[in-house]
Amino acid sequence: MSAESGIPTFRGGDGLWENHRIEDVASPEGWQRDPLMVLEFYNQRRKQIIASEPNNGHYLLAKLQEHFDVQIITQNIDNLHERAGSKNVLHLHGEIMKARSTVDPTLVYELKHWELKAGDKCERGSQLRPQIVWFGEAVPMIEPAAELTASADIFVVVGTSLQVYPAAGLVQYAPYNIPKYIIDPQIPHVSGIQQLRSIEAGASEGLEELYHLLLK
Image (cartoon, rainbow, N blue to C red; front, side):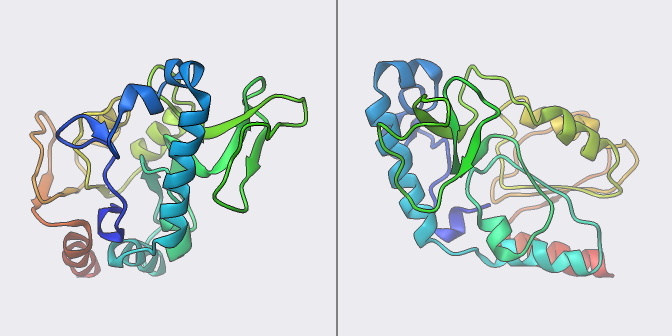
């Protein structure tokens, strides 16, 4: 969804994220091994996101709010949906512009700038970490996401490989008889899903087509 805004996708074909092994920067074990590297990795991602702008796909989803009750469930950790004007955004994998306590996950703080440093602590005196769901951690927002999906009248998948679970399983919760669309330049194989219509295009181009389809 954010690739057209210049933000690299999470998982490239080489299994790396910005030239880092994913397990080194997106796992509790990586954090334990080298917290300074992990902090710096997310600092650079944060800088990149602050310098980026929402793309036309983000703005089209926000514009659809004029006609529909739009609920966005995103695996992205950036804030580009919100900056484009979307009001209802559920972040499955966390939010990079927030930090949380390493002893109490309910202590979450908004970051006003790009840098989170060693020595930045929560009110209980514990080091802050990125508010990101790493591999091997629970996905606390998956149940609210499943409930939203189960109540949908239209379900749209944009720009995901449908390989990362539990997020990829959400499509199975969508009511079987509602219209479902998948937008991607390379449509992933999806079996057993009724009413699935493919739009083989990038996020902005595909959402432009979907926008006009829905308004008809």
